[in-house]
Amino acid sequence: MFRNGKLFLPPPRDGSDFKELFKPLAAAGAGRPLGKDGFPAGPWTPELLAEAISHIDSNHVGVDLRTVQLWFQENEKGISTANIRWLARIFGCDDPVATSEWQIELSAAQSRLSAKRRKWKRAGSSVAQEIPDTALTATFGDETDPPAELTRDTDAKGPSRRFSLARKSEAFFSRGSPLNLPASVFAGVTALGFLSYLTGIHSVTYGRADGVVKQVGFLWTANWTFVFMVFLPLFFAFVTELVTFWKDEGRPKLVAQGDKMESDDAWARSVQASSYSFWAVFLICVVFAGLFQWIGVSLIPLLKGGGNYATDWGSLAIVRPEVISVPEAIVFTGIAYLYMCLCFYLFFVGLILFYTVIHDLWRIGKAASDRPEVNYQHELHEASLRVMRAIFRCTVLGLLIAIVMKLQSAYLTSRGENIVDWLVGDMSSAFYGRNDVSAWISYRRPTHYSSLLIAISTCAVFLYGSIRLGVELRFCMSLWRMSAIVALLVAGYLLIDAFAGFSILLGVGVLFAIYGLFDPGLGRWQASKLGNNQNVS
Image (cartoon, rainbow, N blue to C red; front, side, top):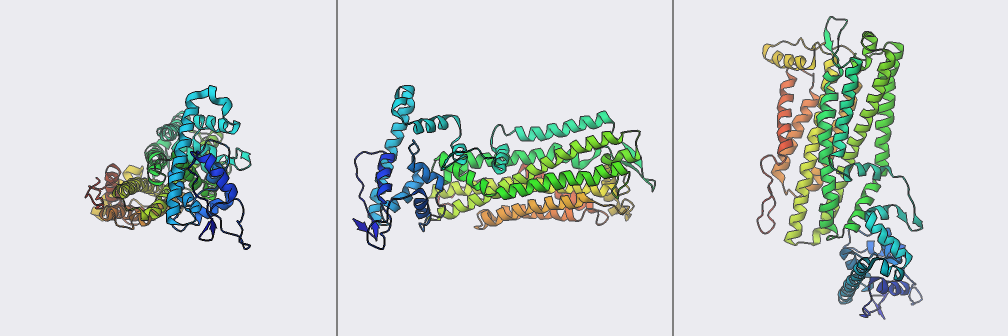
């Protein structure tokens, strides 16, 4: 029987489960176009079937080849509700009536397979002899490993364990307690603080050639204390919260109607798709920002006794050898730079994961344009709100990190005795018309460049989220308020040490930013009218 130029087989309605039903249909090539000779084109292969499903016009998400391969294998893996719809289109040959009949048949077959699976699990070892070895393997894997872990680490030829930097990096944010990563970062800088106290560089001053006495102790360095004790732990906490929510709750609810296994598979594929980005960031952070910067800024000046860099705790052995020796300084700076580059690698991993969540949510929303149900649109709206709140918070924290880094770099070339006196002096100079806090000494400032990269990367993710998730103006007023605060922080960052009184503008931006961290909705999040006039706050 043929329909629409394709081989059509009617639903057998013989009580088969999904595996029993799917195997003969795939072997017969049900739903495949006829060949040039007018005969059936042959059986389905996983590659051909995955391609056919992905080419269905209304299927914007597609289907993963690994998912289709599981249908062909002898295991207890079934089919999700979303994919039943597409497989019914294939077997129904794009005929509406036949597709409806096949959708009913496939749903019933999947229910029968689920019932058998529950029976196998209840029976345990007594039924083990009746289950094929491959099914036992799949059952054991389901009970001991997350489903996504199995599909990520297995290909069509069999199991393989290949190292993936993308998956390993994502695991820092999605596995274990949300407190693990923030606590580890805080513990690392605390350990460095103890080491600085033991070596005597926790609070040290030195007299500059122009007569200014400056505080350059490690614990007085804002870009180490504030960044690694406050801002980065908070950043990692917000990223962990969002990634965990999206992976375990938000995504399964939106895309697969509760099918956690397939949702985890799709999320793992989205993360793996950015593999090159993870490796590029790792190379830049560890090799260039870590190793090369340590060699150029600390190691060579310590060994040769020079360098056109402002004196700080890392080069203190050059001007105050009685406080810390050169070998001690080399070891301490090496540990500090290693810790720093790894932390900032994880910072950029967080930005990549934010981009992945945004793009994933946007694709799901685009694919769901044909689902006007009020409840589904409400869930999609709430997920967008939650994602934008987290992105705004982390954008604020990223800009605060960049601001503190640039402030510390600018302070080293100023006439202030410590960073607090320098900022207070700058505020007072705006009222009294004096500008005696800036020395304008010519030093190389690599921190200016690295802080600019952090600011640009953070704002790029916020801009991408605003375009993708805010394009429908579902929370336009709050988005404008968030954008205004981000713009104010960017202006404050760019104008650091540019004129007398810059700290006033910077202080205003920081106050608004801190308020935004506590209330990312900036007063109230206005939900779109979804038919029941529900507001989300």
